[in-house]
Image (tube, rainbow over all chains, first blue to last red; front, side, top):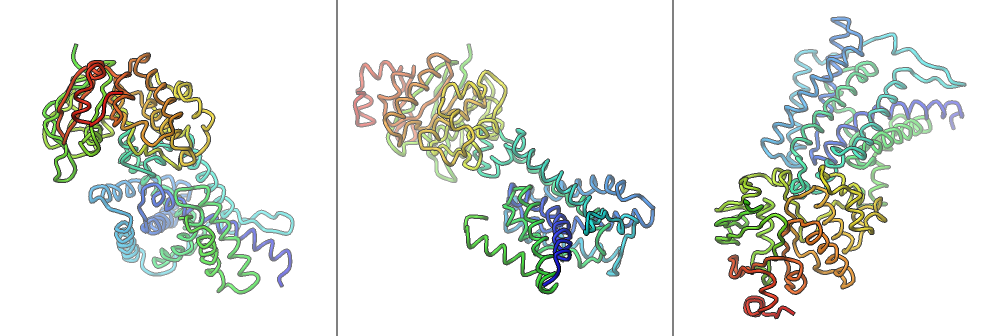
Length: 283
Length: 235
Protein backbone atom coordinates (compact mmCIF):
# COMPACT_ATOMS: atom_id res chain seq x y z
CA UNK A 1 0.00 0.00 0.00
CA UNK A 2 1.50 3.37 -0.97
CA UNK A 3 2.08 6.06 1.66
CA UNK A 4 -0.41 8.75 2.55
CA UNK A 5 1.76 11.41 0.93
CA UNK A 6 1.95 9.44 -2.29
CA UNK A 7 -1.81 8.92 -2.30
CA UNK A 8 -2.39 12.60 -1.54
CA UNK A 9 -0.10 13.63 -4.36
CA UNK A 10 -1.85 11.12 -6.64
CA UNK A 11 -5.19 12.62 -5.70
CA UNK A 12 -4.03 16.17 -6.44
CA UNK A 13 -2.41 15.17 -9.73
CA UNK A 14 -5.51 13.21 -10.66
CA UNK A 15 -7.93 16.05 -9.97
CA UNK A 16 -5.72 18.43 -11.93
CA UNK A 17 -5.39 15.99 -14.83
CA UNK A 18 -9.16 15.55 -14.67
CA UNK A 19 -9.46 19.26 -15.33
CA UNK A 20 -8.25 18.54 -18.86
CA UNK A 21 -10.89 15.81 -19.28
CA UNK A 22 -13.48 18.26 -18.05
CA UNK A 23 -12.30 21.07 -20.33
CA UNK A 24 -12.37 18.76 -23.36
CA UNK A 25 -15.74 17.36 -22.29
CA UNK A 26 -17.31 20.80 -21.98
CA UNK A 27 -17.79 21.56 -25.68
CA UNK A 28 -18.66 17.96 -26.50
CA UNK A 29 -21.30 17.86 -23.78
CA UNK A 30 -22.92 21.09 -24.96
CA UNK A 31 -23.25 20.03 -28.59
CA UNK A 32 -24.34 16.50 -27.73
CA UNK A 33 -26.75 17.47 -24.97
CA UNK A 34 -28.28 20.60 -26.43
CA UNK A 35 -27.96 20.14 -30.20
CA UNK A 36 -27.98 16.33 -30.40
CA UNK A 37 -24.77 16.45 -32.41
CA UNK A 38 -21.99 14.10 -31.33
CA UNK A 39 -18.97 16.07 -32.40
CA UNK A 40 -15.93 13.79 -32.61
CA UNK A 41 -14.02 16.47 -34.50
CA UNK A 42 -13.94 18.37 -31.20
CA UNK A 43 -10.77 16.42 -30.34
CA UNK A 44 -9.19 17.15 -33.70
CA UNK A 45 -10.03 20.86 -33.38
CA UNK A 46 -8.41 20.90 -29.94
CA UNK A 47 -5.26 19.33 -31.40
CA UNK A 48 -5.24 21.67 -34.37
CA UNK A 49 -5.39 24.53 -31.86
CA UNK A 50 -2.57 22.88 -29.90
CA UNK A 51 -0.39 22.60 -33.01
CA UNK A 52 -1.13 26.21 -33.96
CA UNK A 53 -0.17 27.33 -30.44
CA UNK A 54 3.00 25.25 -30.75
CA UNK A 55 3.80 26.73 -34.17
CA UNK A 56 3.16 30.31 -33.04
CA UNK A 57 5.25 29.72 -29.92
CA UNK A 58 8.23 27.92 -31.43
CA UNK A 59 8.49 29.63 -34.84
CA UNK A 60 7.23 33.12 -34.05
CA UNK A 61 7.88 33.19 -30.30
CA UNK A 62 4.31 34.21 -29.52
CA UNK A 63 3.44 33.75 -25.85
CA UNK A 64 0.85 30.98 -25.35
CA UNK A 65 -1.72 33.43 -24.00
CA UNK A 66 -1.48 35.58 -27.11
CA UNK A 67 -1.52 32.45 -29.24
CA UNK A 68 -4.78 31.47 -27.55
CA UNK A 69 -6.23 34.90 -28.34
CA UNK A 70 -5.44 34.28 -32.01
CA UNK A 71 -6.40 30.61 -32.19
CA UNK A 72 -9.75 30.88 -30.41
CA UNK A 73 -11.41 33.09 -33.08
CA UNK A 74 -10.05 30.84 -35.86
CA UNK A 75 -11.54 27.75 -34.22
CA UNK A 76 -14.79 29.61 -33.60
CA UNK A 77 -15.05 30.29 -37.33
CA UNK A 78 -14.29 26.63 -38.11
CA UNK A 79 -16.99 25.62 -35.63
CA UNK A 80 -19.50 27.91 -37.32
CA UNK A 81 -18.55 26.60 -40.77
CA UNK A 82 -18.93 23.04 -39.56
CA UNK A 83 -22.34 23.86 -38.13
CA UNK A 84 -23.36 25.41 -41.43
CA UNK A 85 -22.76 21.98 -43.00
CA UNK A 86 -24.78 20.24 -40.26
CA UNK A 87 -27.59 22.72 -40.78
CA UNK A 88 -27.47 22.64 -44.57
CA UNK A 89 -27.65 18.84 -44.73
CA UNK A 90 -29.96 18.42 -41.72
CA UNK A 91 -27.52 16.09 -39.99
CA UNK A 92 -28.98 13.93 -37.21
CA UNK A 93 -27.34 12.47 -34.11
CA UNK A 94 -25.97 9.26 -35.64
CA UNK A 95 -24.91 10.92 -38.90
CA UNK A 96 -23.10 13.62 -36.90
CA UNK A 97 -20.99 10.91 -35.25
CA UNK A 98 -19.94 9.48 -38.62
CA UNK A 99 -19.39 12.83 -40.32
CA UNK A 100 -17.37 14.36 -37.50
CA UNK A 101 -15.32 11.17 -37.27
CA UNK A 102 -14.43 11.74 -40.93
CA UNK A 103 -13.63 15.39 -40.23
CA UNK A 104 -11.36 14.31 -37.40
CA UNK A 105 -9.54 11.80 -39.61
CA UNK A 106 -9.09 14.44 -42.33
CA UNK A 107 -7.75 16.92 -39.77
CA UNK A 108 -5.42 14.26 -38.38
CA UNK A 109 -4.01 13.65 -41.87
CA UNK A 110 -3.70 17.38 -42.50
CA UNK A 111 -1.83 17.85 -39.22
CA UNK A 112 0.44 14.94 -40.07
CA UNK A 113 1.17 16.36 -43.56
CA UNK A 114 2.20 19.72 -42.16
CA UNK A 115 3.79 18.85 -38.83
CA UNK A 116 4.75 15.21 -39.64
CA UNK A 117 4.10 12.28 -37.30
CA UNK A 118 7.05 13.21 -35.07
CA UNK A 119 6.46 13.92 -31.41
CA UNK A 120 6.63 17.61 -30.68
CA UNK A 121 6.97 19.39 -27.40
CA UNK A 122 6.42 23.07 -26.70
CA UNK A 123 8.82 23.77 -23.84
CA UNK A 124 8.05 26.81 -21.75
CA UNK A 125 9.33 27.77 -18.34
CA UNK A 126 5.79 27.34 -17.05
CA UNK A 127 5.97 23.59 -17.56
CA UNK A 128 8.37 23.08 -14.65
CA UNK A 129 6.81 25.61 -12.28
CA UNK A 130 4.94 24.29 -9.28
CA UNK A 131 3.66 25.53 -5.95
CA UNK A 132 4.54 23.59 -2.81
CA UNK A 133 1.69 23.22 -0.36
CA UNK A 134 2.75 21.23 2.71
CA UNK A 135 4.14 17.95 1.42
CA UNK A 136 2.48 18.30 -1.98
CA UNK A 137 3.50 19.83 -5.26
CA UNK A 138 0.89 21.58 -7.41
CA UNK A 139 2.00 22.15 -11.01
CA UNK A 140 1.15 25.71 -12.08
CA UNK A 141 0.00 24.92 -15.62
CA UNK A 142 -2.42 22.23 -14.52
CA UNK A 143 -3.72 24.51 -11.80
CA UNK A 144 -4.28 27.30 -14.34
CA UNK A 145 -6.04 24.81 -16.62
CA UNK A 146 -8.37 23.79 -13.80
CA UNK A 147 -9.11 27.39 -12.96
CA UNK A 148 -9.90 28.23 -16.58
CA UNK A 149 -12.02 25.08 -16.90
CA UNK A 150 -13.78 26.01 -13.66
CA UNK A 151 -14.55 29.54 -14.83
CA UNK A 152 -15.80 28.30 -18.21
CA UNK A 153 -17.92 25.52 -16.69
CA UNK A 154 -19.44 27.82 -14.05
CA UNK A 155 -19.96 30.62 -16.53
CA UNK A 156 -21.61 28.32 -19.06
CA UNK A 157 -23.77 26.72 -16.38
CA UNK A 158 -24.96 30.11 -15.16
CA UNK A 159 -25.49 31.28 -18.73
CA UNK A 160 -27.68 28.25 -19.47
CA UNK A 161 -29.71 28.77 -16.30
CA UNK A 162 -30.00 32.49 -15.91
CA UNK A 163 -30.12 34.05 -19.37
CA UNK A 164 -32.94 34.10 -21.85
CA UNK A 165 -30.71 32.56 -24.51
CA UNK A 166 -29.60 29.77 -22.19
CA UNK A 167 -33.13 28.88 -21.17
CA UNK A 168 -34.31 29.05 -24.77
CA UNK A 169 -31.51 26.66 -25.73
CA UNK A 170 -32.54 24.19 -23.04
CA UNK A 171 -36.17 24.48 -24.12
CA UNK A 172 -35.21 23.87 -27.74
CA UNK A 173 -33.02 20.92 -26.73
CA UNK A 174 -36.08 19.32 -25.16
CA UNK A 175 -38.52 20.06 -27.98
CA UNK A 176 -37.25 22.13 -30.89
CA UNK A 177 -40.58 22.28 -32.73
CA UNK A 178 -42.54 23.50 -29.74
CA UNK A 179 -39.82 25.99 -28.82
CA UNK A 180 -39.95 27.35 -32.38
CA UNK A 181 -43.71 27.78 -32.11
CA UNK A 182 -43.02 30.02 -29.09
CA UNK A 183 -40.61 32.16 -31.03
CA UNK A 184 -37.30 30.47 -30.14
CA UNK A 185 -34.98 30.70 -33.14
CA UNK A 186 -33.26 27.38 -32.59
CA UNK A 187 -31.09 27.67 -35.71
CA UNK A 188 -29.41 30.86 -34.55
CA UNK A 189 -28.89 29.49 -31.07
CA UNK A 190 -27.38 26.30 -32.50
CA UNK A 191 -24.78 28.33 -34.40
CA UNK A 192 -23.93 30.18 -31.22
CA UNK A 193 -23.47 26.96 -29.28
CA UNK A 194 -21.40 25.30 -32.03
CA UNK A 195 -19.12 28.33 -32.16
CA UNK A 196 -18.75 28.23 -28.38
CA UNK A 197 -17.93 24.52 -28.46
CA UNK A 198 -15.16 25.09 -31.00
CA UNK A 199 -13.81 28.03 -28.96
CA UNK A 200 -13.68 25.76 -25.90
CA UNK A 201 -11.79 23.18 -27.99
CA UNK A 202 -9.29 25.91 -28.86
CA UNK A 203 -8.78 26.82 -25.19
CA UNK A 204 -8.28 23.15 -24.35
CA UNK A 205 -5.85 22.98 -27.28
CA UNK A 206 -3.70 25.78 -25.87
CA UNK A 207 -3.30 23.85 -22.64
CA UNK A 208 -2.66 20.60 -24.53
CA UNK A 209 0.21 22.36 -26.32
CA UNK A 210 1.69 23.44 -22.99
CA UNK A 211 1.14 20.25 -21.04
CA UNK A 212 1.25 17.32 -23.44
CA UNK A 213 3.53 15.97 -26.11
CA UNK A 214 1.96 16.47 -29.50
CA UNK A 215 1.57 13.78 -32.14
CA UNK A 216 -1.24 13.51 -34.71
CA UNK A 217 -2.44 10.15 -33.41
CA UNK A 218 -2.81 11.66 -29.93
CA UNK A 219 -6.09 13.16 -31.19
CA UNK A 220 -7.70 9.87 -30.25
CA UNK A 221 -5.90 9.38 -26.95
CA UNK A 222 -8.56 11.06 -24.81
CA UNK A 223 -11.58 10.04 -26.84
CA UNK A 224 -12.72 7.14 -24.65
CA UNK A 225 -12.26 8.75 -21.27
CA UNK A 226 -13.76 12.10 -22.34
CA UNK A 227 -16.79 10.30 -23.78
CA UNK A 228 -17.26 8.59 -20.43
CA UNK A 229 -16.85 11.94 -18.67
CA UNK A 230 -19.47 13.61 -20.88
CA UNK A 231 -22.00 10.90 -20.08
CA UNK A 232 -21.16 10.66 -16.37
CA UNK A 233 -21.48 14.45 -16.08
CA UNK A 234 -24.83 14.29 -17.87
CA UNK A 235 -25.25 15.53 -21.43
CA UNK A 236 -25.52 19.29 -21.71
CA UNK A 237 -24.43 19.96 -18.12
CA UNK A 238 -21.15 21.93 -18.11
CA UNK A 239 -20.57 21.74 -14.36
CA UNK A 240 -21.33 18.03 -14.44
CA UNK A 241 -18.73 17.59 -17.19
CA UNK A 242 -16.03 19.31 -15.16
CA UNK A 243 -16.85 17.50 -11.91
CA UNK A 244 -17.02 14.15 -13.71
CA UNK A 245 -13.66 14.93 -15.34
CA UNK A 246 -12.09 15.58 -11.95
CA UNK A 247 -13.74 12.51 -10.43
CA UNK A 248 -12.43 10.28 -13.20
CA UNK A 249 -9.00 11.92 -13.13
CA UNK A 250 -8.72 11.37 -9.39
CA UNK A 251 -9.99 7.78 -9.59
CA UNK A 252 -7.54 6.94 -12.36
CA UNK A 253 -4.65 8.46 -10.51
CA UNK A 254 -5.47 6.63 -7.27
CA UNK A 255 -5.92 3.37 -9.18
CA UNK A 256 -2.52 3.88 -10.80
CA UNK A 257 -0.88 4.58 -7.44
CA UNK A 258 -2.43 1.57 -5.75
CA UNK A 259 -2.37 -0.96 -8.58
CA UNK A 260 -0.58 -0.21 -11.82
CA UNK A 261 -0.80 2.45 -14.58
CA UNK A 262 -2.48 -0.08 -16.87
CA UNK A 263 -5.53 0.03 -14.60
CA UNK A 264 -6.34 3.65 -15.35
CA UNK A 265 -8.57 3.13 -18.42
CA UNK A 266 -10.61 0.54 -16.54
CA UNK A 267 -11.71 3.15 -14.02
CA UNK A 268 -13.63 5.56 -16.24
CA UNK A 269 -15.63 2.85 -17.94
CA UNK A 270 -16.29 1.00 -14.70
CA UNK A 271 -17.75 4.19 -13.23
CA UNK A 272 -19.76 4.74 -16.41
CA UNK A 273 -21.18 1.21 -16.42
CA UNK A 274 -21.94 1.40 -12.69
CA UNK A 275 -23.87 4.66 -13.17
CA UNK A 276 -25.82 3.33 -16.15
CA UNK A 277 -26.69 0.15 -14.21
CA UNK A 278 -27.79 2.25 -11.24
CA UNK A 279 -29.89 4.61 -13.37
CA UNK A 280 -30.57 3.51 -16.96
CA UNK A 281 -32.27 6.88 -17.57
CA UNK A 282 -28.99 8.70 -16.89
CA UNK A 283 -28.24 9.33 -20.57
CA UNK B 1 -60.99 48.67 -39.07
CA UNK B 2 -59.12 45.71 -40.56
CA UNK B 3 -59.60 42.32 -38.95
CA UNK B 4 -56.93 41.00 -36.62
CA UNK B 5 -57.01 37.64 -38.36
CA UNK B 6 -58.29 36.94 -41.81
CA UNK B 7 -58.24 33.41 -43.19
CA UNK B 8 -59.21 32.84 -46.79
CA UNK B 9 -59.55 29.78 -48.96
CA UNK B 10 -57.30 27.80 -46.61
CA UNK B 11 -56.46 24.18 -47.38
CA UNK B 12 -53.93 22.34 -45.25
CA UNK B 13 -52.94 18.97 -43.88
CA UNK B 14 -50.02 16.67 -43.25
CA UNK B 15 -47.83 15.11 -45.93
CA UNK B 16 -50.12 14.50 -48.88
CA UNK B 17 -53.28 14.32 -46.81
CA UNK B 18 -55.58 17.32 -47.10
CA UNK B 19 -57.42 17.74 -43.80
CA UNK B 20 -58.82 21.28 -44.13
CA UNK B 21 -60.50 22.46 -47.31
CA UNK B 22 -61.41 25.97 -48.32
CA UNK B 23 -61.69 27.35 -44.81
CA UNK B 24 -62.46 31.07 -44.50
CA UNK B 25 -63.24 33.22 -41.49
CA UNK B 26 -62.18 36.46 -39.86
CA UNK B 27 -61.63 37.59 -36.31
CA UNK B 28 -61.62 41.15 -35.00
CA UNK B 29 -59.44 42.64 -32.25
CA UNK B 30 -60.61 41.48 -28.84
CA UNK B 31 -62.93 38.85 -30.28
CA UNK B 32 -63.06 35.23 -29.21
CA UNK B 33 -64.04 32.44 -31.57
CA UNK B 34 -65.19 28.96 -30.59
CA UNK B 35 -64.22 26.20 -33.02
CA UNK B 36 -66.56 23.27 -32.55
CA UNK B 37 -66.88 19.86 -34.14
CA UNK B 38 -66.63 16.15 -33.54
CA UNK B 39 -63.36 14.29 -33.14
CA UNK B 40 -61.18 14.25 -36.23
CA UNK B 41 -62.94 16.98 -38.21
CA UNK B 42 -59.81 19.16 -38.43
CA UNK B 43 -60.12 21.46 -35.41
CA UNK B 44 -56.57 20.85 -34.21
CA UNK B 45 -55.29 20.97 -37.79
CA UNK B 46 -56.84 24.44 -38.10
CA UNK B 47 -54.95 25.73 -35.05
CA UNK B 48 -51.76 23.93 -36.08
CA UNK B 49 -52.00 25.56 -39.50
CA UNK B 50 -52.33 29.00 -37.94
CA UNK B 51 -49.24 28.22 -35.86
CA UNK B 52 -47.40 26.94 -38.92
CA UNK B 53 -46.67 23.33 -38.07
CA UNK B 54 -48.76 21.71 -40.81
CA UNK B 55 -48.48 21.72 -44.57
CA UNK B 56 -50.46 24.52 -46.21
CA UNK B 57 -51.70 23.65 -49.71
CA UNK B 58 -53.60 26.81 -50.56
CA UNK B 59 -55.08 29.97 -49.13
CA UNK B 60 -53.91 32.87 -47.03
CA UNK B 61 -53.60 33.72 -43.36
CA UNK B 62 -53.30 37.42 -42.60
CA UNK B 63 -52.51 38.66 -39.09
CA UNK B 64 -53.01 42.38 -38.62
CA UNK B 65 -53.07 42.79 -42.38
CA UNK B 66 -49.77 40.96 -42.88
CA UNK B 67 -49.62 37.62 -44.68
CA UNK B 68 -48.11 35.05 -42.29
CA UNK B 69 -49.09 31.82 -44.08
CA UNK B 70 -45.64 31.50 -45.61
CA UNK B 71 -43.71 32.28 -42.43
CA UNK B 72 -41.94 29.80 -40.13
CA UNK B 73 -43.53 29.18 -36.71
CA UNK B 74 -40.92 31.23 -34.83
CA UNK B 75 -41.66 34.24 -37.07
CA UNK B 76 -45.39 33.91 -36.48
CA UNK B 77 -44.79 33.69 -32.73
CA UNK B 78 -42.78 36.88 -33.01
CA UNK B 79 -45.73 38.57 -34.73
CA UNK B 80 -48.11 37.60 -31.97
CA UNK B 81 -49.44 34.07 -32.42
CA UNK B 82 -49.61 32.43 -28.97
CA UNK B 83 -50.32 28.71 -28.92
CA UNK B 84 -51.56 26.36 -26.21
CA UNK B 85 -51.18 22.93 -27.84
CA UNK B 86 -53.53 20.07 -27.12
CA UNK B 87 -50.74 17.95 -25.60
CA UNK B 88 -49.62 21.00 -23.58
CA UNK B 89 -46.00 20.17 -24.45
CA UNK B 90 -44.49 22.06 -21.57
CA UNK B 91 -40.70 21.87 -21.23
CA UNK B 92 -40.46 19.13 -18.61
CA UNK B 93 -36.80 19.61 -17.73
CA UNK B 94 -37.19 23.36 -17.16
CA UNK B 95 -38.64 24.79 -13.97
CA UNK B 96 -42.09 26.38 -14.06
CA UNK B 97 -40.55 29.84 -14.02
CA UNK B 98 -38.04 28.91 -16.71
CA UNK B 99 -40.85 27.62 -18.93
CA UNK B 100 -42.21 31.15 -18.85
CA UNK B 101 -38.99 33.15 -19.03
CA UNK B 102 -37.45 31.04 -21.82
CA UNK B 103 -40.08 32.32 -24.26
CA UNK B 104 -41.06 35.65 -22.64
CA UNK B 105 -41.31 38.76 -24.79
CA UNK B 106 -41.77 42.32 -23.60
CA UNK B 107 -45.36 43.46 -23.19
CA UNK B 108 -48.17 43.76 -20.69
CA UNK B 109 -47.98 40.08 -19.73
CA UNK B 110 -45.10 39.87 -17.30
CA UNK B 111 -44.24 36.69 -15.40
CA UNK B 112 -45.73 38.27 -12.27
CA UNK B 113 -49.02 38.85 -14.06
CA UNK B 114 -49.07 35.25 -15.24
CA UNK B 115 -48.52 34.20 -11.62
CA UNK B 116 -51.34 36.54 -10.64
CA UNK B 117 -53.67 34.74 -13.04
CA UNK B 118 -52.52 31.30 -11.88
CA UNK B 119 -51.31 31.54 -8.26
CA UNK B 120 -50.63 27.78 -8.23
CA UNK B 121 -47.83 28.35 -10.73
CA UNK B 122 -46.17 30.82 -8.39
CA UNK B 123 -46.25 28.26 -5.60
CA UNK B 124 -44.54 25.79 -7.91
CA UNK B 125 -42.21 28.28 -9.61
CA UNK B 126 -39.04 26.33 -8.86
CA UNK B 127 -40.44 22.86 -9.49
CA UNK B 128 -39.66 21.16 -12.77
CA UNK B 129 -42.39 21.32 -15.39
CA UNK B 130 -42.51 17.53 -15.50
CA UNK B 131 -43.54 17.32 -11.84
CA UNK B 132 -46.80 19.25 -12.31
CA UNK B 133 -50.27 17.73 -12.36
CA UNK B 134 -52.28 17.78 -15.58
CA UNK B 135 -54.24 20.85 -14.56
CA UNK B 136 -51.12 22.71 -13.49
CA UNK B 137 -49.44 21.79 -16.78
CA UNK B 138 -52.40 23.27 -18.63
CA UNK B 139 -52.12 26.46 -16.58
CA UNK B 140 -48.43 26.57 -17.38
CA UNK B 141 -49.12 26.02 -21.08
CA UNK B 142 -51.55 28.96 -21.07
CA UNK B 143 -49.19 31.06 -18.97
CA UNK B 144 -46.31 30.27 -21.34
CA UNK B 145 -48.37 31.44 -24.31
CA UNK B 146 -49.31 34.63 -22.44
CA UNK B 147 -45.65 35.28 -21.59
CA UNK B 148 -44.99 35.66 -25.32
CA UNK B 149 -47.47 38.57 -25.21
CA UNK B 150 -49.59 37.33 -28.08
CA UNK B 151 -52.06 39.35 -30.13
CA UNK B 152 -53.98 36.17 -30.77
CA UNK B 153 -54.22 33.23 -28.38
CA UNK B 154 -54.92 29.76 -29.79
CA UNK B 155 -56.22 27.24 -27.27
CA UNK B 156 -56.60 23.58 -28.24
CA UNK B 157 -59.09 21.78 -25.97
CA UNK B 158 -57.85 23.52 -22.84
CA UNK B 159 -60.11 21.60 -20.46
CA UNK B 160 -59.71 18.12 -21.93
CA UNK B 161 -59.02 15.34 -19.45
CA UNK B 162 -59.02 17.57 -16.38
CA UNK B 163 -60.94 17.22 -13.13
CA UNK B 164 -64.15 19.32 -12.94
CA UNK B 165 -62.77 21.59 -10.23
CA UNK B 166 -59.69 22.39 -12.35
CA UNK B 167 -61.92 22.96 -15.38
CA UNK B 168 -63.85 25.55 -13.36
CA UNK B 169 -60.63 27.28 -12.39
CA UNK B 170 -59.36 27.32 -15.97
CA UNK B 171 -62.65 28.57 -17.38
CA UNK B 172 -62.64 31.37 -14.81
CA UNK B 173 -59.15 32.36 -15.90
CA UNK B 174 -60.13 32.17 -19.58
CA UNK B 175 -63.21 34.27 -18.93
CA UNK B 176 -61.01 36.89 -17.34
CA UNK B 177 -58.62 36.83 -20.30
CA UNK B 178 -61.36 37.14 -22.89
CA UNK B 179 -63.83 39.46 -21.16
CA UNK B 180 -61.64 41.71 -19.04
CA UNK B 181 -58.35 41.63 -20.91
CA UNK B 182 -60.12 41.55 -24.29
CA UNK B 183 -57.52 39.14 -25.64
CA UNK B 184 -58.37 37.83 -29.09
CA UNK B 185 -58.59 34.05 -28.98
CA UNK B 186 -59.59 30.96 -30.91
CA UNK B 187 -60.66 28.09 -28.68
CA UNK B 188 -61.06 24.57 -29.99
CA UNK B 189 -63.45 22.58 -27.86
CA UNK B 190 -65.63 19.51 -28.09
CA UNK B 191 -67.98 20.62 -25.38
CA UNK B 192 -69.79 23.61 -26.84
CA UNK B 193 -71.60 24.50 -23.65
CA UNK B 194 -68.33 25.24 -21.87
CA UNK B 195 -67.10 27.91 -24.21
CA UNK B 196 -70.07 29.37 -26.08
CA UNK B 197 -70.89 31.61 -23.09
CA UNK B 198 -67.38 33.16 -23.11
CA UNK B 199 -66.92 33.61 -26.88
CA UNK B 200 -68.58 36.06 -29.26
CA UNK B 201 -68.53 33.90 -32.34
CA UNK B 202 -68.52 30.24 -33.21
CA UNK B 203 -67.88 28.02 -36.18
CA UNK B 204 -68.52 24.33 -36.65
CA UNK B 205 -66.20 22.12 -38.68
CA UNK B 206 -67.30 18.94 -40.40
CA UNK B 207 -64.82 16.87 -42.43
CA UNK B 208 -62.42 19.75 -42.75
CA UNK B 209 -64.94 22.31 -43.94
CA UNK B 210 -66.83 25.06 -42.14
CA UNK B 211 -70.48 24.08 -42.08
CA UNK B 212 -71.80 26.75 -39.75
CA UNK B 213 -70.70 30.23 -38.62
CA UNK B 214 -72.66 32.46 -36.29
CA UNK B 215 -72.68 34.47 -33.10
CA UNK B 216 -72.11 32.26 -30.08
CA UNK B 217 -75.22 33.69 -28.46
CA UNK B 218 -77.28 32.64 -31.49
CA UNK B 219 -76.04 29.06 -31.14
CA UNK B 220 -76.94 29.08 -27.47
CA UNK B 221 -80.42 30.41 -28.27
CA UNK B 222 -81.02 27.97 -31.11
CA UNK B 223 -78.86 24.86 -30.69
CA UNK B 224 -80.19 23.12 -33.81
CA UNK B 225 -76.79 23.27 -35.62
CA UNK B 226 -75.13 21.77 -32.54
CA UNK B 227 -77.59 18.92 -32.56
CA UNK B 228 -77.11 18.42 -36.25
CA UNK B 229 -73.31 18.53 -36.46
CA UNK B 230 -72.21 17.56 -32.98
CA UNK B 231 -75.10 15.36 -31.95
CA UNK B 232 -75.53 17.31 -28.72
CA UNK B 233 -77.66 20.12 -27.47
CA UNK B 234 -76.19 23.35 -26.24
CA UNK B 235 -76.96 22.55 -22.63
